[in-house]
Image 1 (cartoon, rainbow, N blue to C red):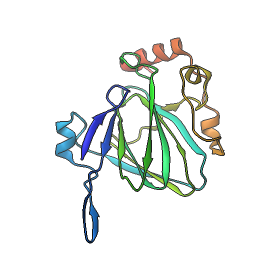
Image 2 (image 1 turned 30 degrees about the vertical axis):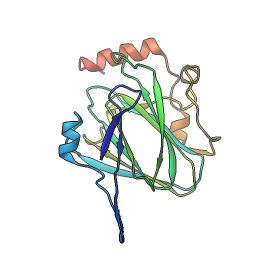
Image 3 (image 1 turned 90 degrees about the vertical axis):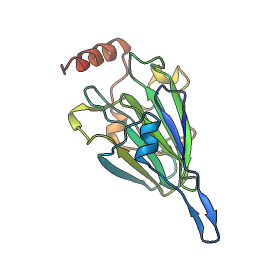
Length: 194
């Protein structure tokens, strides 16, 4: 596998490098030793999946507050998706920067999102399945989100490739992003307060 940096600090593209022969192909999708060499968490605690019926389905933007150290390895297992990462770590050199990658099940690539980076995706074809492997178990009390179309992010160029055709009620109801309030809550959370 090949692991390369993305535009958001600490985020990586994990590219499968299949070996082809007369039977088809074989590719390594995760390797503890290669992740450790790349400075990524070498243990995974949980894997989840989402199944999405329609192209244009949008999930996100989801993140966790400190002290969560939850990072995610996201892979498209079936179909094709626009995967978006938004840096919400006030102490990061790429705070409020975002990047996106198209993940396709046929390519078998994945994206590593470090803790504190928000994640969202939009399906590009019907029947898209997404797998998430986390280095920490889900902690619902630290999970949060912001709207996929928040004006503060759109003003920085965040855009989705298709009209949103399906989105959950929870994702529609996330609060508006307030940078000062976010910074304050992040600092308090890092010190153990909530």
